[in-house]
Length: 258
Image 1 (cartoon, rainbow, N blue to C red):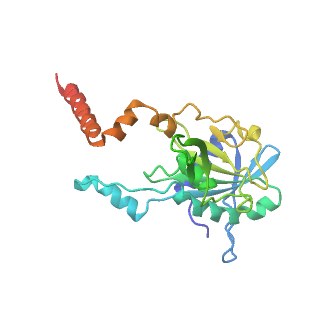
Image 2 (cartoon, rainbow, N blue to C red):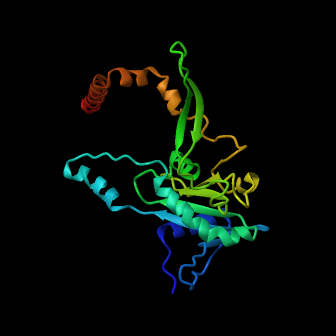
């Protein structure tokens, strides 16, 4: 007997209905250790296989969320992409047979936590590795370091040799007051790539080589570092923090006054 559908699977089926996409749930394999993808999609004359991955709260997530209720405040460093790498690799094995037969494949994530694990920075670093800043440094002290750009490095889940059975990584979300939407991150190393023109009518955003960046207008870390506000944090972090708190208190008092 099949397990009842998860929250993410029900959301994906609702998204398919809203998009007019025919989806069929694939029966679980009876062979121990052999797993199949969750859904087969029929898109006009094309087929596609999808594996759904749901991010659930961990014990650490629950503990962190409970701290404000007990009067405390906690912080935790989250390694970008850490929660996504293992599910991506697991999905690759589930989608391998479909990919070998020439079908495009997608691993689709749905986040039930409060950790923002599906933000762009996490998805890209899970797919292609940790993002690092590269500088050219001269032995001559008169020459300042020159920024060469950002590159991806270690811990990539998708490379030319690894997990090429995944055509794209999808992020399914439901913004407040809006319908379910999917953003698609194309895998440039995929055995069976998905043409962006074919995906365009169905998804909200697409990321990949040769595509215009839909978030190109958003400021980057380097843009923020060039602002005077950022420089204040670097020069006088304690004083800047005190000034920001005072500004917030003034706004609060003004809002409370008759």
